[in-house]
Image 1 (cartoon, one colour):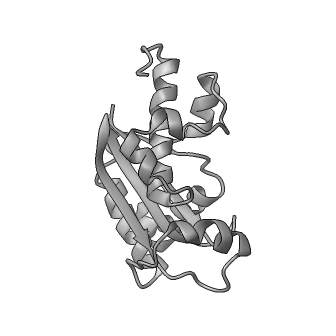
Image 2 (tube, one colour):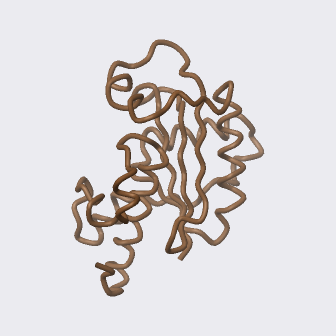
Length: 176
């Protein structure tokens, strides 16, 4: 199964996205995406304390629009035939997708549909939707490199969680 997971970091829970990470997996990670732009306006205190330490200062795009355009191209060029997920899509990832469509109205019917939530898949599989699965589902190198609140790392963990939940729902054997 091809699975695409994406995660965004925003300046506050309902603020504009300033970093986006995504992975496409087919067993192993076969493609990754990362983009970051400067934060517009004063930095939310929670973001300054919890999110920014997980990221280097590498700005990949001068502005949010350029970052969103790059993400949209990456996502839409890979999503055909894939299951597309985000961990808990409201409000950050839903806001990101809405901003992508607001940037270009021709995108209105081209986004991920359906967009699946990892938390809902975990709940359906009888797993704790708020549980910590990094130690169990990430490979040793992935665990060693994992940075909480880095969008690529969070997308990778969400992809692994979605895969595990789907195996349980479909009654495939565990891969422990």
